[in-house]
Image (tube, rainbow, N blue to C red; front, side, top):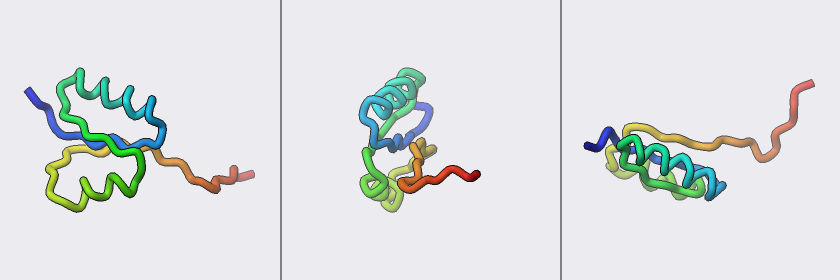
Length: 65
């Protein structure tokens, strides 16, 4: 029985696949996107997502002193 639909977004293919596999083993329907641009299509069209799991990193992150 499907628990819900989850979108996994991460540019690291191995990490994305790992998270997707874990979610699928727990009964979730998973769709994957490597980039935010690819994920937008799932978010703006009616896809009935229940959750979004995303890797968020700032490209120009500077630690605060």
